[in-house]
Image (cartoon, rainbow, N blue to C red):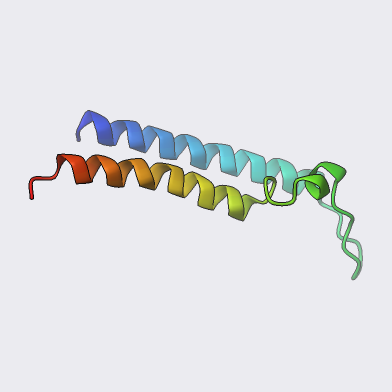
Length: 79
């Protein structure tokens, strides 16, 4: 495995571990859906609805990794 791929694997593993820990922390903190009523969102999340959304963060991180890879491969590929 090349050094480039090894770095990508470590970055991906770091993101996965961080996501798992963050999800467990949030799930433990927000354990309370009582009955049929949802709990209120924290003020920080309400103020930054898109920045605190894990789906949006996943898309941003994906494209931040994908775009440099596409640029790198397009510049180094022998056409």
